[in-house]
Length: 403
Image (cartoon, rainbow, N blue to C red; front, top):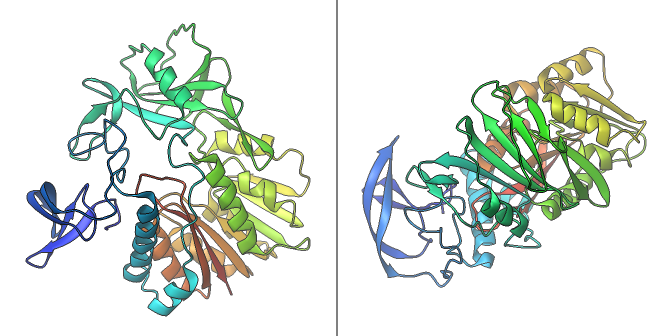
């Protein structure tokens, strides 16, 4: 299985990527295009099926249809093994990590508590036939249901009659308190008049990502490990709440905090990790660049007097800490999908950090950053994959580094 959810074969020495196939199967396929020496193909005939192949449950799943799920045709136990294999492959090929290190560090994937109806948020795009999700081969699949989304979101989708041309994307959200929200992403700075008799809040996201509250609440409320967190429209939060709790547990374990340490929470979002780090550390410095998320973090962490919140970029914050001779003992990083990059890693290396917890949602960027971190003296000790996204190829994990 290749990273990206498609099965990988070879033809005349060139890699061939085929969606909806499973390693070990025999198929006939035809090419649909290519890029950078790779060939893209679609399956025509299944000659010998894998024992892990099952019947998908969603009518929108399959060739030519929705690509919001990638692996509904694969038994869930096999999905977990494939994710571990893909992560190991990325660490080897892109991270250049020795096989013995990968074998020692990489743990089995922790399964999800629920493999269906676990998403508290559903983001849809406008297509020619209505609101839907992207197809694997391009275009948009209008959907009447999504088997990953909470039932309340699908019920809301069924009731919506939205004719607002400036909205290119919309997100349906459900908080832990059951309250529903509609977020419209618009292509211009406009302030429309909207009316609704549905029990939901409505917010806009301008092209600058600035949120505008129109109806009801400006934020959703979530309960994570018994703590309440708010997330304003536009602020990111992972789409599986029980999975977030597993990430917190793994990250706190990786940091090995004590009440004498100064610890960093970088790319902190709404402050979920900081809230639990503050219970064990002397001081937490929380860094977030997106203003609405920083405001959420300030609100969510208001009961803690041992947290310093910095609204700004991570590289700048690290450079200022290094210039001030900051005695930082540990750090947690939760970067975007493109990873930390060389500059941030260089600044981390200039601080007296002994332990680093790297929360990742992308195996490729984690692998590249792991290589750079090892070059700067951080040794990989453990990687705990956690499945927050059943039926998809997405892999979340917490990697523990020490020096």
